[in-house]
Image (cartoon, rainbow, N blue to C red; front, side, top):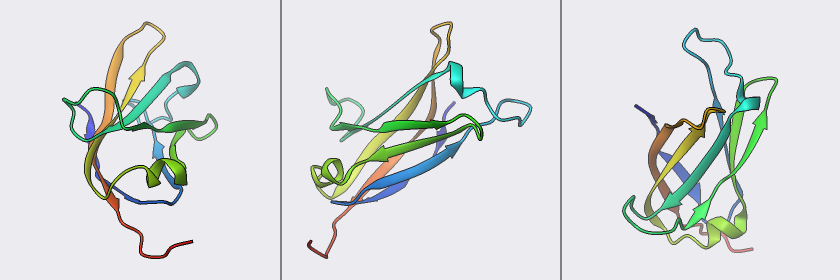
Length: 111
């Protein structure tokens, strides 16, 4: 079962969140041999994702960073969305490691 965490994203700004991954023995997960995917949809049952996160890997710390650009967040209307992060092992096995709600918050300041 995936870990659940809600995230808040300010519309029209760059967004980054770090995920520290550990194996069953609480050792850093060997992420170099794994593939990760993450999308945002209005609801799970809708067709194509509204946007996809870019995923950066820090192999030294077993940290994934989910990234959205200001252009991507600007395209999302304020409101509640769903997101998840999938992990694919070398064997092809897929598992969901994180899921939750993504709240897009309107930004007051205009640049």
